[in-house]
Image (cartoon, rainbow, N blue to C red; front, side, top):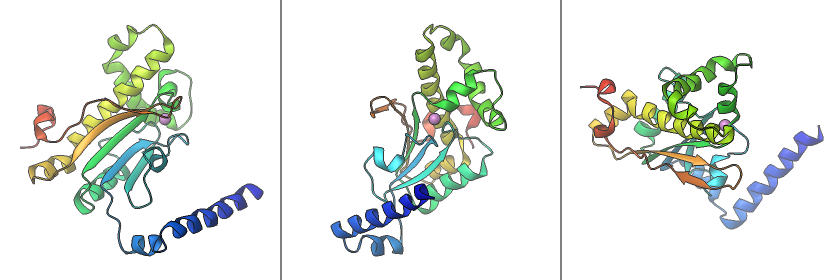
Length: 209
Ligand code: CO
């Protein structure tokens, strides 16, 4: 059980280091959280939200799942978005995918992976929509990277299509949805330049009157 004990040792060290820099750090946080950002990212252990954007506890609200997918009927993800937008009043929602995503790679294969195949169907749906574009890329790595980016683009759209974002924008709330991608190989985040700040960018078929 040495590997588990290590985590508790690390925790004590981490907490005391934070208290050294600010003796009231935890007592201030215990009253409330007021993060400005919601992060929707992949569960991949190489993409820890707080660390890669240099934010402390209390500064970013986080939802992670395999391949950072926003599914229209996923009550877990929708609840996170609703709470973040309506209660925490976050200013920014960041959908951050990453290159070399195992979930994206698995979705491109035909071999079975168990229950998760059902989840990865959502990635296959995106592959089907962009099949011609993806087939044009002959290099396999580049094709996977492209699908990682296309997945972010589609998930940003899915966030914007939710009733939550549409209601928020109608009510005049200032909240922007961003699409980013993180490079496992260099640790650098790239902004895909697809930020959405209002209803004008929502496709008409999804728009609520
Ligand atoms: Co991933």
